[in-house]
Amino acid sequence: MKKIRNKTICVSPGICKDGKIELLDIEFLKEAGSRFAGYIPEEESIRKTFSDDVHFFYTIENFDGKGQETRTLVQAERGLGRVVKQKKRFFLERVTLIESHDQTSDTPVDEDGFFVFPEDEYLVVNSFIPLHYAQTLIFENSVICSSESFTPYPVQIQENSVLGRTDGDVESISSEELALILTTDFAVDSLQSNSRPLLLGSDHVEVTNPKTKLVSSHLVVKPRDGRPRNRQAGTIVFNSKKNCLEFFDGVDWKKIETEK
Image (cartoon, rainbow, N blue to C red; front, top):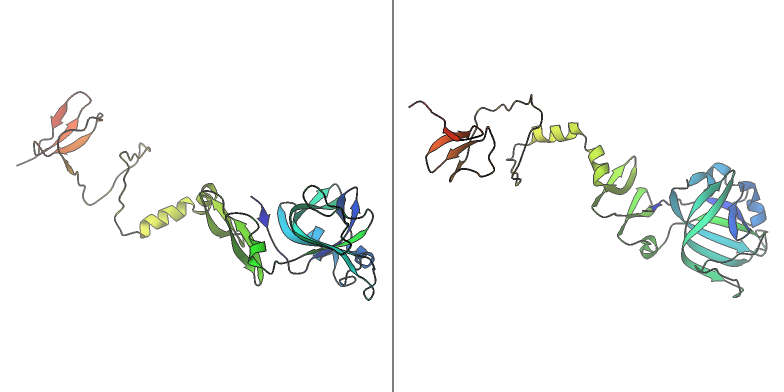
């Protein structure tokens, strides 16, 4: 399951090296021709914002002029990716392509359809929020959620899971994770506050602690027509055929004598 998060404004300069897009220090934004040069601190860059276990929607822009007044967009690509750290270097791993635009019409692409950008060319890598819900639902079995205002992101619901919120994030929660959230105290409190009958369809309910006590103001043994076959020593029934209480001692059934 891929965890996807979005940010409204998040940017890093990049450069193509050996077919990989390396994310550079924020000071290279000017060389890349970004309008954010001089305004975005390194702490708000893509390589500092997204950890390697988080996917995000990216835009890669390549300009043929690096000045703000003279730049022209040559290639632009949008997709889903993540930041990969290798020692002290950061790279953009492109996972899924959404769309691409090429003004030259001759930019090569790899087998997955991603642009093969010119080597040693400075690029602008931005995060973006899809404007159309169809792009947000990039994976099957997903729903659109938001932890911040105007910042939607998809959450992929896994099989036999529920949608919930943990640590401020809306995400898919498995039965094992749900059990950790709904602790023993939660279960006990739920039973204590419940006043409705507890109807169990199981044919076997057992309390395993040998020191357990069952305390109630009264106990009802429901009448049954005859004796059970799966008896064991200590079994007590109300035999409706004989209209009496019986118990099994491990060998024979005995009538429980009551006062008249």
